[in-house]
Length: 280
Image 1 (cartoon, rainbow, N blue to C red):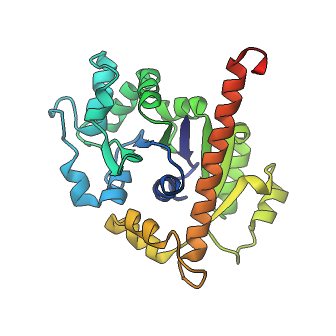
Image 2: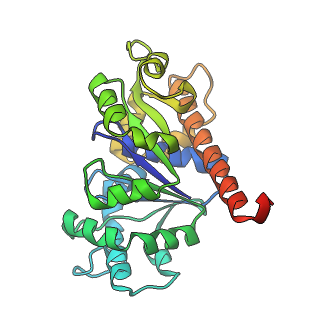
């Protein structure tokens, strides 16, 4: 199952939401998840999961400079046809034992070249991901690049990351409403004091409130992002008391993770029924 985390702007927490929700998902559910980005940059999932120094250490594993480190080397080998079904095991980094994995970046290939090669081998790449994990979470660039269009078209579920800025909301519902049938919506840095409450958003735009999930701002989580300690933060607060200052945030992340996984299970059941004769 392919889940794209995407937003129509860079400022709605796509990467941080994916990191938090991926950790919360594997705490509750027994699935194997692989996370990956279709864009290159220093502030990536690796730095959030591992911290920047540790993420740097794993960049060049298994590849030389020409091929590119990490995900670039993987994509280049698939692009050239130099791979078999076991290739992912040489490129993924285990984040949480037997459940959460990440394909680190090398950041030695130009982003446009990476996008070109990735888009041209995206279908065999997805087949490899499906072979290696039940669920793939893809941090998808908001920019209008080739692979983002393909990922959004191929994704089984799109986790749309928005915020309470009316300009961002207007832009999404005006220009990207075609994504709604397979989307669940996160409202990042949600504030109950904003006039754009979930109720207001669902009244103004064509989306049910049941498909909208608030992710409130949390200063300690924000610090954990910068220090690469998100895993410790989510694990340490997953069962926190109601009195904890982190409870509101953690409950929001747990709810979003639960609904995301349950939606993928529903999609998988529908696919299985469609493949079975007479729905049996």
